[in-house]
Length: 376
Ligand SMILES: Cc1cc2nc3c(=O)[nH]c(=O)nc-3n(C[C@H](O)[C@H](O)[C@H](O)COP(=O)(O)O)c2cc1C
Image 1: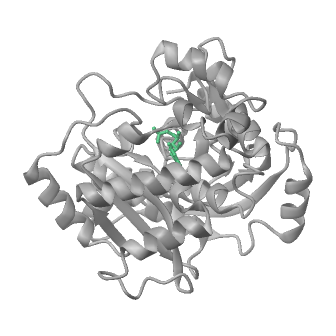
Image 2: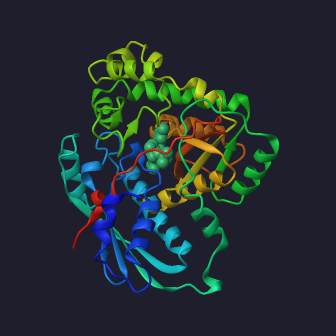
């Protein structure tokens, strides 16, 4: 646990939980996935029984996420982490989302800011009320199973080991019970997704503003002051030391967009071998009507379900960030999911999946509790 956080919560008394238990719940909820590992949230205790969850605009991706979809999904996943953590402690809670967590005013202010984390505003996204000790009927065994996966789930961006048939069958059965999920498992489909992803990443890597923002969150050298706290470090990206050193130079915003425009970007950023090593790729479709924070919750659930089977994943969001990408992936599901259309919803992401080779599992860094807890 982050030792910093202990001091932050020592003075806080809850009827249902000790300060130490609250720190543990927050610490575990922070294992939730967040876009570029930005962890764009803050949390406030209102004793005796309420949390407020805020979005942190200094961590919003202004270029990559102008619609705030990924920002809110990351916060939704964190909120769900708190709920699952409370379930593990047998506490019933009620989560209430803010009606408009990102008002038009917040959006325009945030998008006017530069991409260097200078906007320190926070915005209320949800409140979580601790209700009571759960009765045995209120304890959901599915939630407990998923909650226990929170500290085990990780991203893996290297070459996968293949998943055996039996595990694949179990995973498929488990995921088929979830709504709006599709599994692509033929070599042909995986190769097609690889081609779509490569084309889409090469387009976005041609944009200097996008690369500037990505580079800000990369930590390619261990000497980076934020290596152990947030963003994407070279270990989390499964880069070998030479690849990280080359990336440090060639992924610079002054260089990568030029290389991408002349068709050479893929030599530095290609993920084809990793994508093609996937045993299967899971697509997550969400209706437009869904609250973006619930998308984050569903995404986290999906990932925890996969973790239950020891399956490691890496999202391929760039494949579906553009309209062209959405269209191409929707086309792949036209036969099996004819009701999935662009007017009904969109793919939130695709997850490439497989087993992690022995010894390569890595727990990506997190901020300290002290950084995310707001003192009264
Ligand atoms: C909305 C959202 C989109 C994401 N998109 C990508 C992606 O396109 N590529 C990727 O490698 N990781 C993606 N991630 C995963 C995060 O980078 C990852 O959760 C974060 O680095 C923390 O690492 P961990 O999942 O290993 O705990 C995404 C996460 C979220 C919440």
